[in-house]
Length: 242
Length: 242
Image (cartoon, rainbow over all chains, first blue to last red; front, side):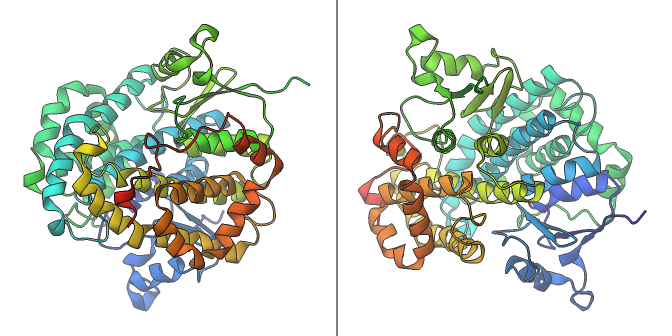
């Protein structure tokens, strides 16, 4: 059997939205190339990412990374990529309604990710954080007081209904994404998250359960896992962690 | 043949994200109830929406409206609902890869919708526009100068590659959503959009082609179509339309 070769195209120096795809590929032990992290001499680097972004690799033109290439198929939008990968990677329960449930939860994860990003970019993604600091401080205050408790409280409630994992008995790509959300929020806003922890015991257990999975633990300990930084979606600016 | 009865749950007084679902149901001539727009005495009103939001109608707990109920299935997240409805409503080309392509485009539409909303709510969705006006003015300037041209330029390029519609020869739910985006931007930012129009001739033609479809034209002329207003996603505040 020839293994499917997945090519992931994402910014090579940040976790970003690409990390949700990386975690799924790693958990499944899939054979994949993180193309832009390869040397340019091997067809990698940002140059390769730009080629696929400009549509030069064929397929439907993507708007932004991450982009997954599988043979001649070019698939973009994080939740769409995970929806596609779920069945072949064994990371979604069988059946159309379960796939829709997973997509529904993943889109809610995506909403939280977008809001977490906009905390440090409330005016424009095209300006530096340093150019929108007063607005970022205001947005962070509301994000941590209202939005994070609302989103995490929702997922805590889903877990209470569903069991050990968000879709029931077995881990899905949504659980991997939830681990990433929790890790990101804890990196960016350690004080705010510490105050919230007693309200989300099930989510915290889920996060620990995912981190302890052998392939995820090996991945997190490897140099394939790019560290969190103030270039990514989740950024630790102490002044925003009220 | 018994027609499938779709129940849509959404805020009864705004187009909002529910409108993307309404347009698909209307174009297909589907039998549906816009439940929260029915009188409370008939099981409608915001009270009905709250019941489904609290999970009292069963199914996976939703985070936010719109929500579609089909028999005992409860489906949330706009793009997820449209992904589900595409095949039975005949609003997506056949085949898994076409469904993924449609979802990919719809998620990019969703990104633009979220950014259009945050123009008037840059600090928090939980504050009034009046409490974040200076920041909204700054965000609007960047949104209209950079983000709208980038998004619409992208869709214009997809149309140039694909043909009369975003997925090729026949209209899909993504085309209906694109019509809604163009209508919303034209309502909210008439001056800014007028300056952009010569760069998006294919999109404008697409919008006109959708508006002229018999069921859509009948819908737009009916009182089922809620008018745009400053309560919705696309809001006309003249001070933001630079």
